[in-house]
Length: 452
Image (cartoon, rainbow, N blue to C red; front, side):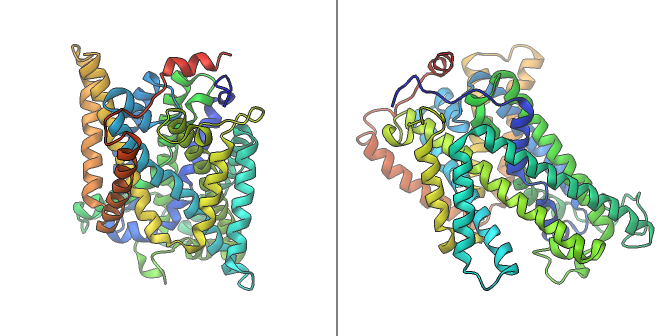
């Protein structure tokens, strides 16, 4: 590979925000509503507020580290530069669970949607079709990926606005609580706070996406400013959409007794308030959400693999290669596409479990990286403001992540540990039983290379 070929800086802050929103999937609020409503005893908006508050601390930590190390490697790079290249490998390895499996989950969901409408067509056709389209878009250009994603995210937001309009109409006509303005979705005498916390722990995973935008640091026009800004905007915008959407949904459906399947409420919600035509419109937005999530995560994992290849942690000739004209990691994009094709043989529940494990590993070490870099290495803790920003904030973020670890399903933990053990064996071979360190590229080399 020609080391002068680098990722192309072309993304503005709003393109990056939309990429994060595409990963988060605004429509997911309706898919998780039944489960969250049951756990929280009908206080889903309150659970989302708590989840947003918890995630903002970790989002702040991502922003601080993106300023210090504007690399596409995200949590992998931050851990490598602040703590240990060995730890960094395991963080990157675990994050691959998150990033690799999201496109697979998207392929599975798209297959489920399409098979339900066209049962006579083999399910593998839908998976193959999705993978081919997503792979071609990601091969071509990050700008093409960002633009396609933005159109589909805007479509989801338009559908949510239409839902709110219809919800107000139905509430005024007596459906649900029978009024547009009510505190019932936020408080009622019979609620249990432990249940709300349990729901918030589940809903925190709806915010996955604000962290993924750090993988576009080397393609951002002004990474040290745009990436931290995009992280916070993504988290706040996503949180606002989730809170508003869940408020009106909870007002319409104070409990889950109306639903035949509380685990898949989106089709019933849309049918009850808008009829068959709106249901079709609504579910097409859910389909768009699955597509954007898979498309954006496909791009993100390709860049994480690229950085690990560039660092010689993975074979550089394959993973560290960029196409000279497109300036995209083509082999990684093709590899992720190939992995997605195996979705036909994968279990949706198991894939989701592994995603949660990988995300929590990344969240944990990004918070610890802020403390290791700013507080321990730079000793920026002598003023109250510095101490709050560089120690208190990431410590609170780590504490909230610890709560999520506590609520992680046992199967998720066991499968995640097995994946880490596979990585341990690989790293032992790579470093000749840990006698040498995994390779790394300095951030200033990246920045200088992109000026060529």
